[in-house]
Image (cartoon, rainbow, N blue to C red; front, side, top):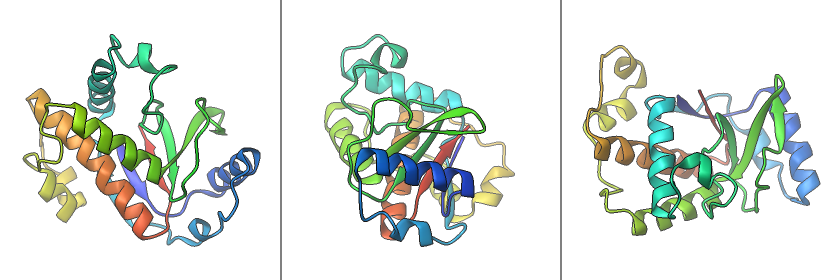
Length: 184
């Protein structure tokens, strides 16, 4: 699973624009001018993202991410297999606001994601903010990183990696007025 910072496909962009209109969000043109590709950031895999959301669910007192999905206060996290975050401050709907090839797509806010991650950092005892082994290599050369057989074996490093990737991606997307897409 990866985060891609850059222009959305035409279908995704149209869906995002329509969803923002339904939400009453204005001033949404700048992100549509983003370069095609700015960066790719690895979230390791879907299991790692689910492990992270399960960690967050437990911080909130839920058994797992499935139990937290409808009640979580951290609504900007990647609870869905496909998510788009825009560099706009808005309150996302709790359910996916758009579709791509018939699949539900969550539409969230980079600003909201950063706020959620900051709160999670305060609640967690997993050392969020630390640079897990291999992360710098991935950020320096994504292609070379993908050619390695890199694996994280301890739970704490996986949680740190996903938190940091989401944070770095949202900050980069905001600094470049670009959407961020997360998908399996």
